[in-house]
Image (cartoon, rainbow, N blue to C red; front, side, top):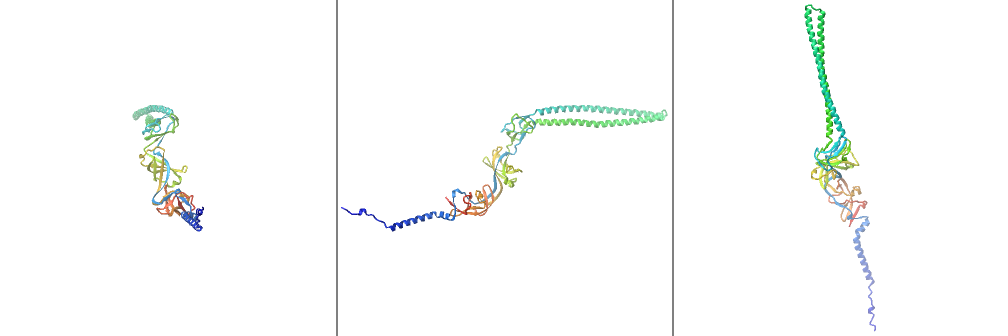
Length: 423
């Protein structure tokens, strides 16, 4: 028996109500999607690029003291590190090893010079010969002086005889025993004897002066030879090469037991009591360098201060070499040619508006910067810059203290006037 068709019946919905629900649901989804994506659509419509916030650097404009400086590198050099040289040709024996501590005037090397030894012996022999000649000359002078004095005494005796003969002749002439002619002859004999005696005295006087000059000449030759021998002795003493300062031996510049020429560098002695920094500064900053500029250095992790004391007058490899005195170097252990990182301070400005240095300076020539505004936007803003240091750049106009700016490279959006920061 057929009970009925109720099991086959199906409820048919009203088509108008189903379509209305679908339309309402679709509109709701569109509204929600447009609300979420409105900034993106707005940016696409106005051509504003979106930049990931994590890919850029954002810094805050601050007010502080700006030090215009540069970072350079160099090495520590001893303020007093003399090189020792050979004074003669010879065979060198190095007595102090590199790194060994030496005292002032300690013998650190010895030179053997057979040529100098032979020359000293020759000059000693010459000095002895000249001394003998000088002594011989003294004896010869005494003999010559004695001969001249003997001649003078003989002339004086002749004068005395002539005077007595003249007295006798004068008495005889007065008694008319001799003729006037004989009397005149005796008078002439006295005059001749007197003249010979005067000449003999002058010869003795002149000989004394001449013999004094001869003696001085011989003494001069002996003294000259003594000076030559003293100089050779000094050169011989310098064959024992001594340390001019207290310190340590740096490096051997010649091999042990080698025969070296004169004026050859042998070794260096490093004075550890005082060091200086030898820094290489780019040529671009050469005009800013000056004696007395402050230098901040870091050596072996320790920060020290110094000041420039010398500037090289020439440029080598686009670098200018300067020397800076290290203050309070006793607090650190320095080594010759140890590397130094330094910062030379050219100028200090107080209460300066500044921002950290970044790649933005090269993107738009340092004339524009992107300044953050509300709603995650950043606007391109014209600025003017002033002094720059290793870390900061002075901002003279365009932005104010406390504002945030993008300091990274603008290569991805340098043509945009505004960007949106996402992420």
